[in-house]
Length: 339
Image: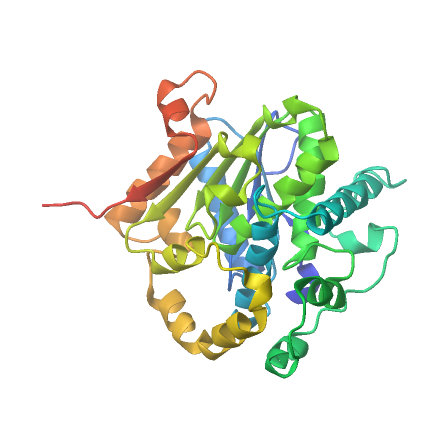
């Protein structure tokens, strides 16, 4: 399959086969990350958890080039902002419930579990193709005063905005893990955290008034592109974010707030597309944002410390450790070592 065809598919590290273990990692990769790069990251997580073997599963967020990835991220951020309690509307709540109903149809499909290599949207009731078109986004400046709901519907139909396939696949895998009684860690990088946040909103709507769905859940994000306000309220207390002080990409993306993205989406998208070359240089040269930095795959002392911290967060008992409990709902800012 091509890189685009693997969008939303499951990937795993061959020497560590999945065996329905009681601890499960669901990994979502970030921008400009192809399947080979995600497999490298999954292998790193397998080695970090060797003392307490996990099932480590990747939900692939395919890359279609940096411009498309950044546009997806911006659209995902706009939808998350509409889900903030103080910003939600009847339209946004109705759309979220539509996602939950779509998830329910996936969970009730006659084929269970959905095969790892399957196109998740092929199992949806409508089974329609996404109308997403990057060419349309490039022409946004010619579309006068397009309302957010109109843009959302014309680009994505009934599917989650931004990256619908990995979002729905993650939500589906989360429901399966929770129902199986597994302790499930969502581990996400960069744009993967935008995908994770929206998937968690869908899962919360899916479970409705059942409050215990969140108990087995832990969220570890590195190079975060979100704020805690982007997460469902119950999840915020089960989440820890890691960001290096010099991670400029995470700093810029996570601080997008209170800007009514849907009111000036054309301008925001055009600016992102125009600045893509500059952002490509930052992402390409800023080692403090790369997944390889946070997972300790570079010969960088700060990166090794970040990997050690991720390892501790994965291996420690979140219910018993006072340190972990004190860190929950915290963005940990990593610094360079001082002499």
